[in-house]
Image 1 (cartoon, rainbow, N blue to C red):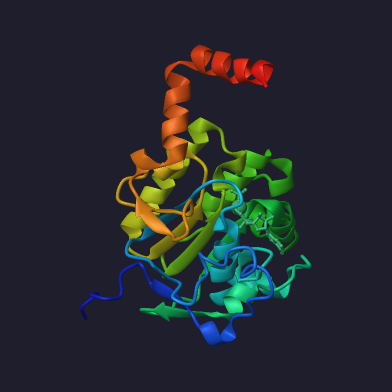
Image 2: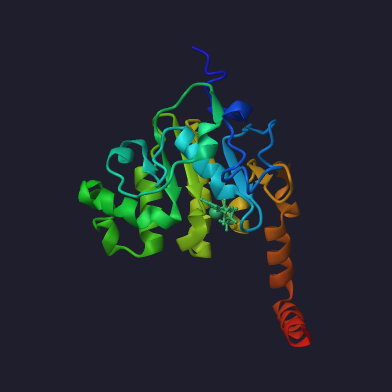
Length: 254
Ligand SMILES: Nc1ncnc2c1ncn2[C@@H]1O[C@H](COP(=O)(O)OP(=O)(O)OP(=O)(O)O)[C@@H](O)[C@H]1O
Ligand SMILES: [Mg+2]
């Protein structure tokens, strides 16, 4: 049987249904131009990055996509939703979005760094994490436990959707490079779609991914080298002394 059409991205698009929008409430009050009546987001590759300045709406959109796809708003795998204890309000954006799948997938994980400890506790409690490195998650460092969950819990045998909000938070630069290798494994499996909100220039350098910038009034694809994160990091590391001098001079001049 031909696999055409059954390769990632499985989630092809999310489209706003204007009649379901409550313009008086968050996030429509906060992002009226971004979330206009014509809002839709296309996914054309296995791996998509959300990039942009703090507060531009990346997590808001990722969280909406996650709940739209059936994950618990507090994060975790689909099976975790029955056990999740995080009290979070539901996503009004999710209520106003329609997903287009080919095919619909029913496995995956929604990782958010702010609730990872809770999800790790759950994985420890149900005994799943005993298999990881012989140590339970709470006996590992933040970055170690994070990477072990990614390596050991994020399978590639079945079609999966992985939604990750700032996975770099606990990862050293070297472990971010390991994460790139993991991304390559996921992509090459032909079974995984990943959407990642990130500030890490290392992670967003992954070749063949789409970088979607949230920095303007519309979400648009940008080249990795055009991102603010890449330009600022490169300029800084090229001449840290000059950068710091200018930065602190500005402070004393104001
Ligand atoms: N429930 C809420 N009610 C009102 N405002 C909110 C709510 N949740 C988030 N915001 C605001 O919406 C804006 C966008 O937040 P969001 O977390 O989506 O940004 P982000 O692009 O993920 O930022 P960062 O890069 O810092 O993670 C922020 O200014 C935030 O304070
Ligand atoms: Mg965020």
